[in-house]
Length: 189
Length: 401
View 1 (cartoon, each protein chain N blue to C red):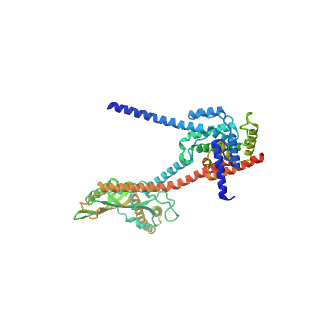
View 2 (cartoon, rainbow over the protein chains, first blue to last red):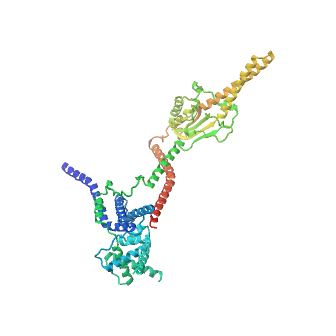
View 3 (cartoon, rainbow over the protein chains, first blue to last red):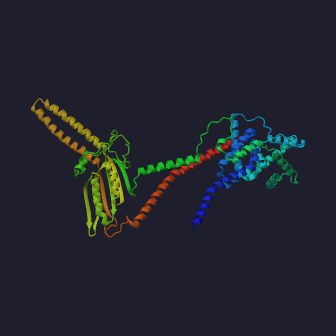
């Protein structure tokens, strides 16, 4: 009887000790998996907004760190984890953009973030150049929308969540922007 | 193109975009949709890719749980150390609670914790005629003539109201003379009335006061009630009232204060004048040229002596009235007939229920007061927080031009 009680107590204590560790590990793993899923997309989005590799690295790092520190504030009822993370990244990117504007160091010409590799086919290179040039015709907000959709890989609902719009409004704006982009491509072609 | 068709087209094209992004290929047969799908894929390919070094570094930090000491250095952009303040809503909430507590405490300090019917009042006495001072009965014991300290300040609950005008209340006088009075109606079971009456007398003695008048009504079933008129040193009125209130259930309580400073000052000034006149008359008597003049001065001196006596009496009376507070206690039998067999609701289950209801009522009262402060402050704080958030958001959005 006593042995049983001791065994039982030992198991309980072991579980009690292990639970916080497990919870921490689980949280950490969960965040690590979020990182794995989203890191390239978050970076692509931030880099497209800032158009500066070094600043994009800083801001992406900040965004993930903020998200990690505030991971307990995430509420599933208020959107996906991706939307939540992109919201944090967006705030960090816009803050950085504002700082840069205040300092008057906003770049004149956008940095060539992804130069076509020599292996690219000529036609593909031309097409990419056309798309890039068309992107330049967009306003900042339209460019952000395109970036969230095609580089961030967010759904329209997630974009709506990040930008504080309704889903239908986000869809309409996206359609308008992509149509404008398509026409710009036609004009360039 | 009509509106529904337009909406349908938009939805179809958006769907085509999603399909292309999902499959990574152009899937639509519609020319426009195909073009859009190609554009979507091209845009996705435009996405900047992070450097492997940066990925490795950030991944390691994620795995380490972002240790605080390993912040990415940014030497080219030195920043001022940021003060980490708690969020505005939290600060607002804390401030609201502190203000609410301060208000409730101040409200409680300003009011007695007695039952309903308790009244406090301080009023200016009208410019009373000097003869009014003689109404106070002479104390029966030696202690009555002991002067109270000059700085015997009134208790907070019946602090005199500040002067509101310049006439009739001696505005320049710093030491106010307040004539205080209190009235208390106590109720106790018939079989305890005698004990309560004894308690009143003992308590008065203990407070260096005296019983000016007392009467106990008796019937077939024992004591049925009583009346007491007490005098208690004014500076000890509050503790005395509090202790009297504990002798039995308080049915009613009234306190008032009359500012008699003008009369006091006036009587003192007239006394000084009369004394000065006496000195002058005595000097004139010494220099009287003949007996007739001396006799005339003596007559005036006699009159002056009478005046001085009267004024001295007025000053003494006023001092006594303000040094001692008048306390009237009415003692009642709780069941109305003084029956010894009546239950004592102050004890037992009934008393406990009464106490519980009283506590509940007090709690509700405090909660309502707290709510009255917290609610508007909370709304204000919430509004400010929302406003600040909106401004911050607008500033951020402004970065996009």
